[in-house]
Length: 137
Image (cartoon, rainbow, N blue to C red; front, side):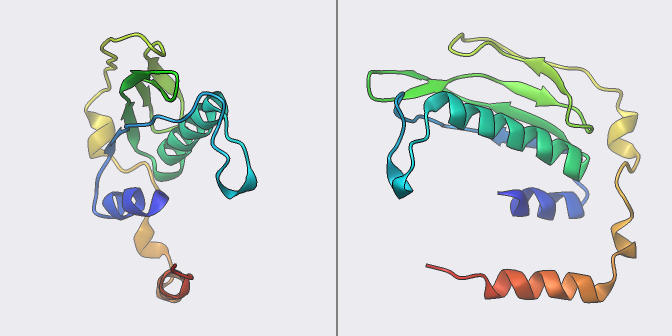
């Protein structure tokens, strides 16, 4: 979900940690009339992390657990994206390891995002109204 990350970014965060505990059936989950394979799900998750980094101008650090059973897979990979959504460090799926990257500390002190104070208050009100009226189950 982008909303928690957006909330943190609006409060000044420049670094987002996203720990995962992903484990899905290797052949896919038939929920909601569709089959999501493990690799398709993994690709979607990694693309989402890159998008968060680029959209919110944050360094995004993702980690995951390794799960290998006949019923479930968790790739255990760790990845780090820079503020442009570029993958700067990647772990190897299904291999335990440590993934690191170094950044100049100035990127965490400087603003790399548009000035959110310039967003019209009316637009912020519209966003809040849309969020509150979104159907809940």
